[in-house]
Length: 109
Image (cartoon, rainbow, N blue to C red; front, side, top):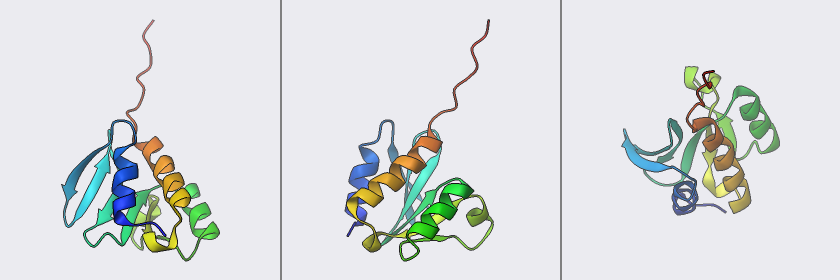
């Protein structure tokens, strides 16, 4: 069973991650926000691709659900942390973090 403290520790261990306030949540970002943690530490919103979101929601429907609005259609997915193992939380963080890395600029010739 994962907790908000687990998420904070694991997210901040990912290279380049910083934490900042985001409305009533804590946002974790590199170049872009990739996960936000609810103030009560019980849930988090992850930024996945729509395909990743579909996969996570299919494989663990008790833990993951698409956010029910335009953000959800973009891949933002709510996770109930108590329904995740530490390994599942780490996998979700790694997946979302990879999308938040700075875009590589094409090299000029």
